[in-house]
Each structure stands twice: as structure tokens, then as C-alpha cells.
Length: 217
Image (tube, rainbow, N blue to C red):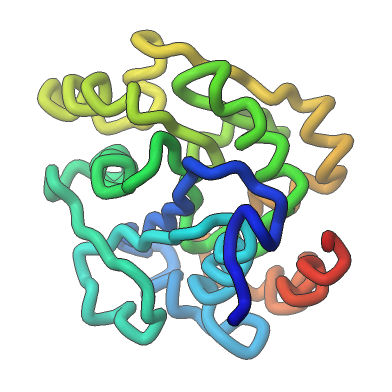
């Protein structure tokens, strides 16, 4: 039997992978998570990467029937209709670990070394977040259970932006220079909002998950 998590990838216990699959995909016109990619679907590429790093990977969705083919644990929003912060809150609340690594379902070019660098800092702050060319990347970040009451307060106040609760918690930033040293093209943060974005990723920039995993062992 193939082991997942610490034994396979050298990870410490205590982190759950969380994929946020609750977006409306208005500009794309169809469900981004299920778009064809690398012989499968976007969400399968994301989940494959995370399953190589974490013992458990959750998918947060309010349409669980669309994702049962994944075979993993599916959870739904606790605060329905509250956007991406509501999904992030659900992932953290439903996790069985002290921290989560959260990522959007349409970011298939994840860099394992960058995720490792973020999770290695998880005990230093409530949030560990990388800085890309466009600023902080809250949909590619680590969140601790200490964030939950502050997320809930923000949601109760109808503040739906992820960063809205950041002033109330400890935030550790992985600076852009360090991120660039690990992922020079910042490909980890590429996502798909429009058909043009999707076609640009049809020829993937990332190494197939199975190849990168073998190389990292």
C-alpha cells in the first residue's frame, strides 16, 4: 500500500490540503474545476499534487454531487453565500488538523517546494502567505485554527474578502524574492478566469504530478 503524507513526502503532521471549488465561474461560462486538463480535469491536477503532500485533502463545494468521482472528503459552506472567505472558513472548520493549506481549484501548476516552504513556517503565525507579482496570494496560503473566530467575526460583519481578518491575526509573509527563487515564473499562482486564460494553459507549464513526485523523493 502506498503511503501518503509524512512518510512519502517528508511532511510534518498537522496540515490538511483544502481545495476551494465554490466559485461561480461567470467569466469562464462553465465550471472551472471540471475543465479538461492534462488528460483529466483541473481539480484532479490540483488534488493529485496535494495528495502527494498531505494525509487528507478536502474539497469545499456546495455542489458535492459534481465531485463524488474524486473519492475524497467533500465539505460544504457553513456560512452559505459568503464567497471565498466562507469557503475558506468551511475548509478550516471541517479540517481535523491544526493548519490547512488552501488553494483554488483552478491553479494546477502548483510547486511542491513552494508549498513546503510555506508549511514549514506554519508555527510562526496564524497565516503564512506568499507574495507574487500581483501582491499577496491568499488562495495559495496556510491558515491555522486560530483564524477561525476572526473569520467568523468578519463573516458576521459581512466582510467577505479573505484579507479582511488579517489585521486581527499574526501574518507571516514569504517575500517575493524568496518566492521567485523557488518558482521563478510565479506559475504557482496562475489561474483561469476567462477562456483566454484557459487556452494559455492548455500546454501546461507545470511538470505532471507523478514526475515531480518521483524527482522529489
